[in-house]
Length: 270
Image (cartoon, rainbow, N blue to C red; front, side, top):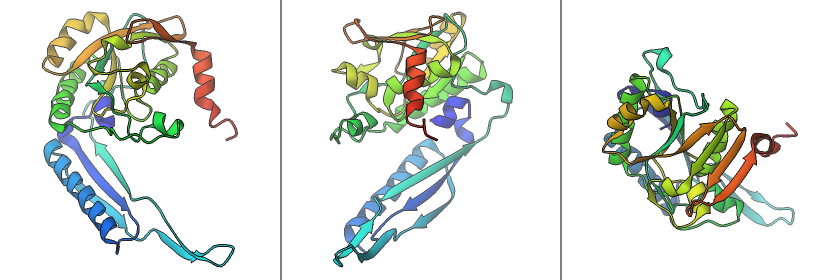
């Protein structure tokens, strides 16, 4: 999805896997490894994106003693890193994440659901959640193919994959990148959402946030027909991030200076 959002053709994407596992002589860990490898196979087949290389590290464990001399074992969580590479034939059709012009329309492509299990939002609140995001690969593939067609007609001003942190973080990132404000409404999101915070921080998969010139609205919507997508707002020159909730009442109204300060605060000592 990150590659697709930059304008890469899905037919020219390849993958690399890196399995960082632990305790691979433990039947439970081997089972988890088997299921992860099966998922790699299943989704690669659907998206038609081959794995061309990779590496494995199966025993990321430490066995030793604590300060009291008691034996212990420390293991990493089983982790799968997948890298993707793709080709863009015409660099002039590459799409960047920054909003471009005041008055451009803001769209969310793909459905948002109450899927926050394992999310950044729940982690921040010291929770885990049990409703994890489910990947609907066939729907996503159709959406990505339509997106690529629109990108080739240069109908898209900016695009950014909605990943960690959900829509709320993505809106902040694209707004900061372009130094322009946004005014959006969560009640216009495609999908089923029950709470404002869930709408902002759900990590439902397959979604892309895009902005387009109003003159491209008809052509863009024609290409995207048959997919889940909706216009949720517009780009402004007010240097503010304004978000209206599910009841269309304002729940976020921040100037970009505040947003940038919060965004960079984690790295202030680096």
